[in-house]
Image 1 (cartoon, rainbow, N blue to C red):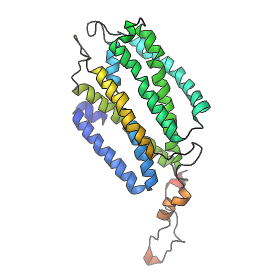
Image 2: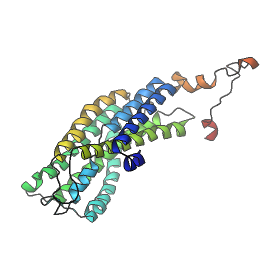
Image 3: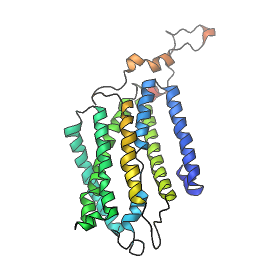
Image 4: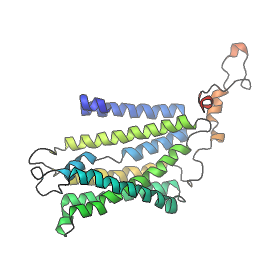
Length: 289
């Protein structure tokens, strides 16, 4: 999809991505139990609703004086290197906080909390874009490091931990590696689509992010709509697809579902008189583990 969008057209890339998403959802519905499908659909919506405005924000923060005279004008060294170091430390802190306070929560409250906090953390970007921090005497670099660089990385990890746990716990016994890879692959593709959609929105908004006389007038409105409002309106209801159980409990009772056993024990050659009891497990995955 990235190659299509880069070398062909962004609209074509989005259309192709839409077809792939529908195909993935249809395949999941056809192959797996309905409970697995509902959980996967919830995970897809939780990722897709977090539309990324990273490209527009990056240009805003690093725009030079000719492009944006009253902008933050961060150097690439500061924006990439220093924030990367801070982000690495915050990742460790986020894991410790999650293990200490949120590991005993049920899945839905954990996902809703991370979604709400992640949306509210975007207000830091919004304040810097509106230049309100400068109006009250807080320098851009200080406000950025204490706000965006800290809370964005923090909320990303708080959101990613339960999502990864769900992808791991919905895998049936004996097929863990294949199904986990399938679930994570869908999540990664949805993340790419959310980035692609964010780039398309920025392009279609008419913003000018390079050259002279740059125009970022639409950026505050886009940040508010697609990184605060949309995640709450779509992400919070999407958690209803996730069973509201403790994180230590199984999400799917595979012994009750007996999904893959029914598939493997089906009579496959009636002419030779092979019965269900004599049928062998034809799955490849258990042999690979």
